[in-house]
Amino acid sequence: MGDGPRTHEDRSEWVLIGVPTSAGAHHAGQDRAPAALRAAGLIERLRAAGVGVTDAGDLPGAVFAVDHLLDRYIDALVSAIAGE
Image 1: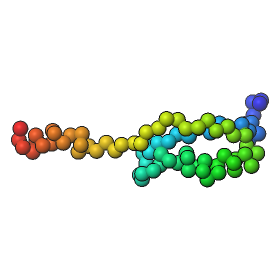
Image 2 (image 1 turned 90 degrees about the horizontal axis):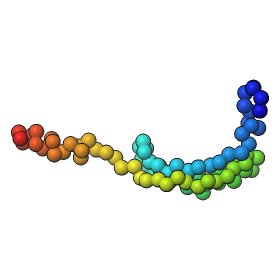
Image 3 (image 1 turned 180 degrees about the vertical axis):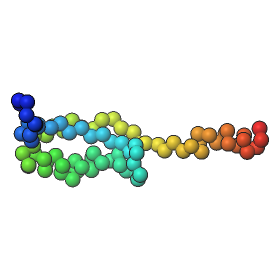
Image 4 (image 1 turned 120 degrees about the vertical axis):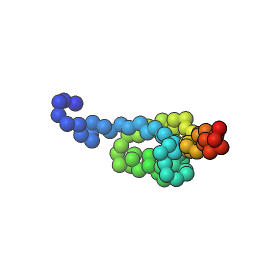
């Protein structure tokens, strides 16, 4: 490889790992993105462009649940409002 900058040729073999998550998403369904990209032909297009791709599947994922502050502190709020 040498000491110079890396080129595209240095990175001709790729491993695709899907990370199905909706953490930080503004809309539902973001966790389905890895499957949608595969269904849209991402791997086939990369291979057609001469990129060696190994599909390693998806990491285990979970749908992100919004942590509403109100839910977390509702008991303390009710007590404060009631003067307890």
